Structures are given as structure tokens and as C-alpha cells.
Image (cartoon, rainbow, N blue to C red; front, side):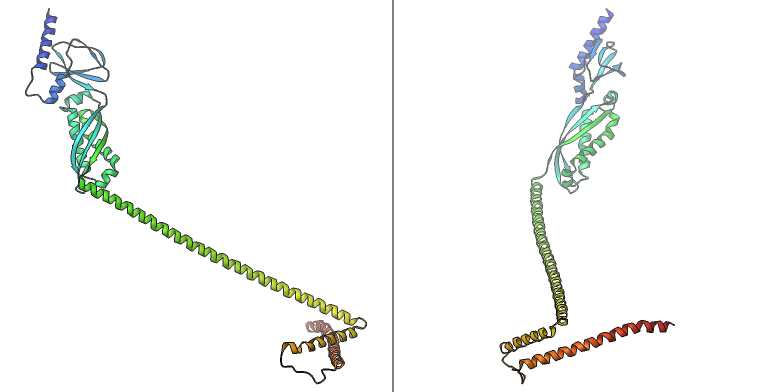
Length: 350
């Protein structure tokens, strides 16, 4: 009987608390009260949920998932915390960048409750508190960056906001996992100026690329001309070297041929009837030279005995005989000098 009255009284008390609105409670408290389960003595707690139980208005324990037993009237389920990852849409807000540009930014916040006790008694409404903290942190972080860096350093901005939120939400038993900026809206005039800046930057890049192409083309043409001149000079040098080598070889060949001819001539003169052959050769050369006098010049100087060929040949042979005697005398003298040289050197040494 007593147990039945206790159950009836507890049920009526909880029903009165749910139906009768209290003017001094906040909307967050009304939301939590409307979602609270009734104490039916035997309770089944779902997975990934934490039910905070108060006994006679004081924290008693946190129910674990599964089967749990409570005392009616004395025990009351005060808070129900979800341990899943919670996604909160941060409403759009205005912020001023470092270069005094007003931006409209909204985002998405991902968090998880790690300590149900702190999340229940550390703050009145965890979601509202974290949302307000995210908005204020976003404004402060955007005030440190210029407009250009806001778009370039979006990832670092998100990480800074998460770090700032976690420093304050540790006392609430809440852990911020990620924060993502969804949209960034800029004023129309600033957007037009940004578009003009982008177009100017593209024109600048095109001009720079065109100038670099012109420079590379000029460098390539100059390099080609340089290589052509170097190759031409090397070719001319090789041609002159080959020409000089050919001329030297020709001179050597002529000298060798001339020396062989002189040697053969000298050998022929020493043979029998050599003087007659030399007289015949001189006579032929004289006749040939005399026949070419009128062809080479208009002025001709003739000797008084130009018609006396035999006299000219005799004179040439006389000159040849004189030179031959002189060379024969010079040879023994040279041999004597060569023999006297070592004897003089030996006498000087003694």
C-alpha cells in the first residue's frame, strides 16, 4: 500500500512539474525538463547516453547504459546527456578584419561531451555556451588577419578557433573536435575591388610571361649567332691550318723533287759524255728563253752576239767548269779543316 502511494505521489509530482510552467526557469531548463524520462523504478538507459540522477535535490550518480533501479520520489533524473558527437550550426555573424573590412561569416561546430557531471552542473546550457564562445572567438581571430589572409589561411583560422574554444570548455566537460567556416560574405564594393585585383594580377602575370618569352627568344637568337660565329671561326682556322699544312707539304715535295733532280743531274754529269749532255741542255734553254723575250715585254735587250749560239753555250759551259773546279777545291779544304779541328782541341787540352 505504501509503495503504491509513493509511486502515485512521485508520478503526480513529476506530472505537475512537466505541466505547470515555472516563470523563474530559463528556456534551456524547460527544454531539459521536457525531455526528462520519468522515474518508474526500473529504467533502461540507451547506449551513448548518460542520465544524471539527483537524490533529494543532490547529485547522486550517473546511470550507465542498460538496466538501472531508482527509488521513487527520492531519486529524480535531472539531466540526460548525449555522448555522441554533436553538430551545432553557428549562425551568421559580422566581424571586422585587420584591414577594417566587415565580413559576414557562419560556421559549423563539432563537439562531444566527455564529462556528463561537468556538462550538467558546470554551465546552464552547454550548446548555447559553446555557440556563443565560438562566435566571440571567431570575431577575435578574424580581427588578427587581413582580408587576403582570411581566404588563404582558412585552415589555420579553424584550428585557432578550436584551440581557443577547448581552453574555455574544459571546465564544462565538453571537447570541441572541429570547427569549419561555411561561407564568407564580403560587401559588394569590396567584392568588386577584389575582382579587379584578380584581373590586374592575371594581366600582370600575362605581361611578365610575355616579357620572359621575348627575353628567352632574344637570348636564344644571340646564343645561336654566337655559336655560328664560333663554328665559322673554327672552320676558318681549320681551313687555314689545312692550307698551310698543304703548302708546307708542297714546298717540301718541291724541295725533295728538286734535290732529287739535282742529285740525278750531278750523277749524270759525272758519267761519260756528261758535258755534251749539259751543253745540249743549256743550248735548249737558251733557245727557249730567246724565243720568249718578245712575248713577255715590249722592251728587248739583246746581246751583241745573240745569233752565236755555240759561243753562248761555250760561255755557259766555261762558267759551269769554273764552278765545278771551285767546289772540288773547297771539298779537300773542308776535309782538312775537319781533321785539324780535333787535333787542335787535343793540343789545347794538353
